[in-house]
Structure formats: structure tokens, C-alpha cells
Amino acid sequence: MSLMLKLGEEIPMKGRVVRVTQDAYDYLPSIRDELIQVAADAGTVTYGELKDRLQLPWAPNGMGRMLDLLSVDCQRRGEPSLAAVVVGQRTGEVGQDFDGDPVAERARVYGQLHWS
Image (cartoon, helix red, strand yellow):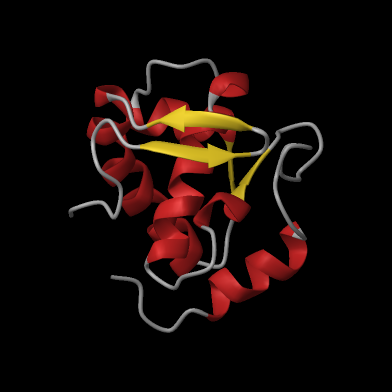
């Protein structure tokens, strides 16, 4: 699946600029697909589980930038943010840097009738 982000694109977010790197461009489609499956089951996945399932090269606590980029991709598609289904093992909730109300966003994610 193609992304709504361009390789090398610089996206201003949260007071900084995030570049779509080759790693982001390579891994985001798999992350998106996995989170769509989690959303279809109205579930959540921990950062560690996501890392292990997809053999991601980042530490679980280092996935924020990727999930921020995924949120931009979802926004450009007119979808709720799939990042809302990724939670911490200890807290059962999204990281503190999540932009918005995670409970309301998860409800929108679960209510999405068709994930493309």
C-alpha cells in the first residue's frame, strides 16, 4: 500500500520538523496494515508487541516519531489516527505525547467501517 507521505518530505509537528526517512517510508505500510488488523478487532497493541510482531528496529519507547507520521498519513486519508490503538504495557494507554483524546480517537478508529 502506498503512503500519503513522500520520501524526504518535512512535516512540521509538535514544534519541530519531522522528515520522512527511508526507514519510515519502508516500515510505515507494514505498521499501518498491522494496526488496521488490531482496529478491525477493536483491540489495542502495546509498543513492545508491535515491535516484536513486525521486527521493528526501534526500542518500544522510540516509536513516537513513526506513530506521529502514521497519524499524518491517516489524517491525509480522512481517517482517524491508528496510533490511538498503540498503548503502553504498564498504563494500557497511549504515550503522553499523543495529540488529542485517545479514548475518543480509538472510538473513531473502531467505528471506521472500511479501512483501505
